[in-house]
Each structure stands twice: as C-alpha cells, then as structure tokens.
Length: 319
Image 1 (cartoon, rainbow, N blue to C red):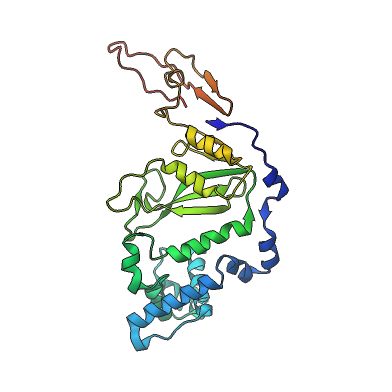
Image 2: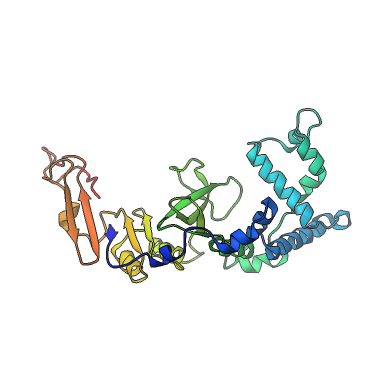
C-alpha cells in the first residue's frame, strides 16, 4: 500500500541529511565522539550504580571505580567483539603466552571479572517496585536517555524504514522472544526506525511483551510507526505488512509523511476484487485508487479451483 498526496519534503531539503551541527562541533576524536552518546549523566549513573552493587556484594573488599576504569572495561568488551572473541574464555584472553597483551595491560583479570559481576544500571534495592509495572526497569532510565540522544547526532535522509530486529540473547529475561526466521532465534526484540541510506538508527523501542494480566494490544504496528516517526515530517517510511494499514497511511499523511509497504490480505479495508486472484493472468496486476492512496495486487502465478473439490482453491500469494 502506498499513500499519495501533496505531502512535500521541505523539512528534509531545508536540513541537509547527515551529521548534525551539534555532533560535528563536538566530535573531535574517538573519545569525544563516544561521549556524545554516553554523556556525563549516563556515565555518573553507570558508575554510581555499579559501585553500589560492588559494595553490596564485596563489602569492604570493594574499591570504588571511576569513569576511567569503566571506560577501560567497556573498551575491553568492545575489543573482544572486534576480535570475535565474545565466546572465548576470559582466562584465555588474559593468558600470558596465548592471550592478547592489550587485555593484560589494560586491567587485571580479577578486576574484569568483578566488574562483570556487579555492573548495574539501576539501584537493585528499588528495582522490585519498579519492575512490577515495567519489565525493562533494570535499564529503563539509561536506555531512554541514550535513545533520546540519537536524533541529535544525525538527520535522516528522505527514506526511512521501520522494522523489527532481534538482538541475540540466551540468558534469563522475562521478555525474551523466539523468532525462528532470525539468525539468533532467541533474543530481545527491538522496533527500530532507520535511515534507509546509511542504516543509522534514530529511534528504538524494546518490546517487553504484554503487561501481566493485560489483553493483547490492538494496532501495535500502527502505534510503533507513529511513535518512532513522531518528530519527522516530509519523509517516506517503508514497512512490512505487520505495520501497514489504511488507517496508518491516513494518519501519517496528516503529519506530511508518505508510506510504502505491503499489506495483509485479511485487512477489512481491502476490496474483495483485489484479494481473490482466481482467473487472473500470470504476472498480472490490478490497481485501485482513492484520492490519497494507491494499492496494487500482483498475481505471481495462475490460481484455479481444485478439480475434485470446487470449494477448495490454492492460497493466493498476491499483495
């Protein structure tokens, strides 16, 4: 389904896509660029909560860390990923002969293991009360601060995509998802709005499932697109049939946003002539129009009634 109209891209043309002035002025080197996404407010919270947990677990044996030590810890985690060592035992990375010297010189293995154990993003003492209404409570505050900074660093181009992604995770998590079509299969689902040209992600939401005792949310796809595209105008958003609907296209058009996407056959707003391809020629298409919308149904093969059961027919693959 494609929404059409007089929505223009003045906002996109007026502001050149790419890094914002805010980011360009402040990004002087690798360290300053990293701190654009992890400002002092996030740094302070991460260090304070980790020290609080360290004192709780190790008592007098714990020596409070500062942001420099936290940077070293994060740097080693990133480096392990770059070296494709995320499945390698920590002791082998620190091994005096077979390991990598940069790990040993940056931080003792004992300190690394301690930090890995007590790394926290919130106060564990108050977590239970917050988690009763929010499954993302352990990281909610830092997550939202981080996501809020993403649009300040980069202006997306004209074309935007909204879709789901699965961050592979095999540990315990109350909202871990199973998606057999994804490479990781098990993990945390995130809704993401990205620049189609550069893949820069400027808005994200973690899917935590339905709240305990609540009914299944209706129009979830519509809500996700509207919320992730909330601050944009004049763009074209592309999404799949989980999100696409006539109502979403109409509401986006009011915000001067056009939409392109596939649509499911069972949508009630679709004319029956478009959802029943029996008798169509192979590779043929049928178009339907309103003043603001265009939809095309494509027939990839010939559909016919079953000879032995006239009420049976092959499943349509048209969209």
